[in-house]
Image 1 (cartoon, rainbow, N blue to C red):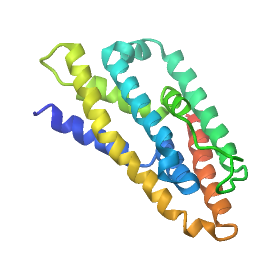
Image 2: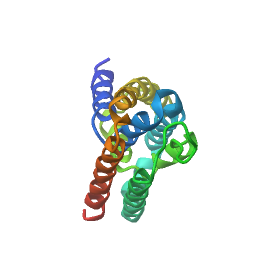
Image 3: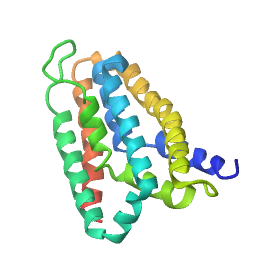
Image 4: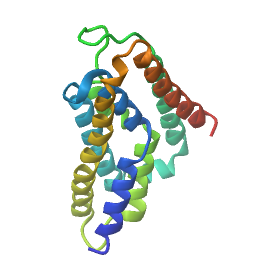
Length: 195
């Protein structure tokens, strides 16, 4: 239990605080509602869980031994954030198919270039992974805690966005909201590229 409480606290903190996933999920909730954002939510949660599990199983060591991989992931993550920022500024019309929410596969794949998810995974594997048990068992325990904490936290961000839908039906407000969220993603991308 002494190993699990810090892991649980860290997982909650990383899942509940702002970052690329939560910005995108809030925007998806505002534009498409909670139900249509479910594939995005599941992709974030399961993709991040699998990444954390792989990192705990040894992928973190590979990244530490080869900094060029880390740099490539950082650049790929920044480029993806810029692409998503651009995508958020395209016209979204409620009830039409002009724009679609991020899908499961796209959201899951993004976790492998998302800098915040990598930070969480590597930190969990190196600092918070339970000791005194086989690596495979400890990694599965970490996966279970990651999934149990992540999905409710990111759901709150999506529900917050969905709650904004009524306000964003006023002319120009949805576009302004999307522009602010796109700007937030662009700032994160620039910060990643200038590190």
